[in-house]
Length: 365
Image (tube, rainbow, N blue to C red; front, side, top):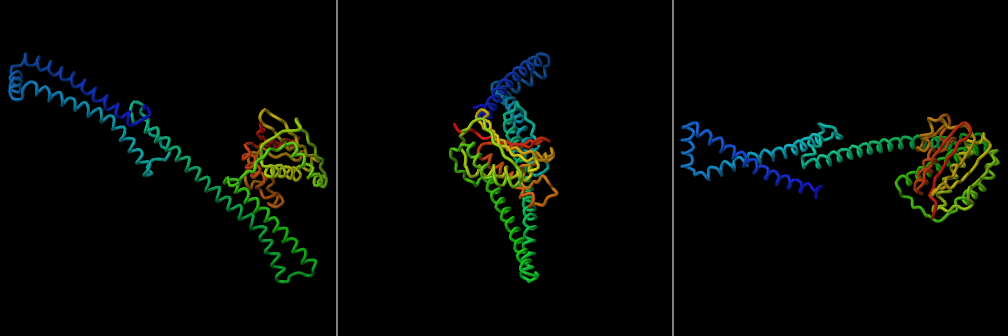
C-alpha cells in the first residue's frame, strides 16, 4: 500500500484534516484568551464583543471562527501538497514542449506523496533518452550498413559488368582472351555470392530469425573431424596442425552445422593470416561448467587498436587489402552471433608470439 499513490494522497489528506482541526482548535483557544484579556482592559472591545454575542450567539460565533480557521489551515496544507504536483506537471510540460532536455530530472521531494510520481517521471525520461540514443545508433548503423554493402557490392559488380560488356561487344582477340574474361567475371560473381550469403546470414542472426537445431555434440570429436577436413588445405598452405584436449569427450548442446561454421571460419582465418607461423593449434580445456576452445596461430600479431573492433561487421584488420582479399568482413561478426546464440562468448588475444581466438561454451549436464 505504501507504493500506491492514491493511498498516499488519501492518507496525506486525512493527516491534513486532523492537523487543520488541531491547529484551528489551538488558534481558537488563543483567540478566546486574547479577547478575554482585551475585554478586561478595553471597555470598547468588551462592548463590541457583547454586541456580537447578542446578534449571533456565542456558540455560533465560536463555530464560525473555528470553521474559518480550519479552512485556512486545510487550504494552506493542500496548497503545499499540490504546489509540488504543479511544479512536476510544469516540468513535464516543458520537457514535452522541448524547452527542457529529455533527460532533465525532476527534483524529488521525499516528504511529498507526489515524490513517487517524480521518481517515475525521471525513470521514464531516462528510458526515453536511452531509447532515442539506441534509435539514433540503429539509424547510424543502418546507414553505415547500406553504405558498406553498396560499396562492397559495387566493386565486383562493376568488374562483372565490365568484362561481360567486353564479351558482348566482341572486344577480345581470341578464344583464350574470351575465356580469361569469362573466368574473371565468374570469380567476381562468386565473390558477390559469398558476400550476399554472409550479409543475409548476418542479418538473420541479428534479428533472431535463425532457429538452432540443437543436439548433444562431442565438441572434441567435432573439432577433430574439422581438422581432418582441413588437412590438405593446411598442407598446401605449408602449415602443420595439432590438437590437444584435457578430456576425450566433452558433451555440449549445440547445432553442429552452425558451430562447425564458426570453427571453419576461424581455421580459414588462421590459414590466411597466420601461415607465416607455419602452425595451427586447437586446444580444449574444461573450466568448471564451460569448455574453452582455443584456435591458435603464430602469424603476425593483431594490433591493440584493431582487437576491440575485430568482431564488428565489415571491419578488416589489413586496410591495404581489398575487400575480396580480406573476406567479406562479416565472418567474425557471424561467428560472434552464433556463439552467443549457444550461450557462449568469444574472445581474442594477440601478441608477438601468437594469436588466440578463445570460445567458451556451456557443457551439457
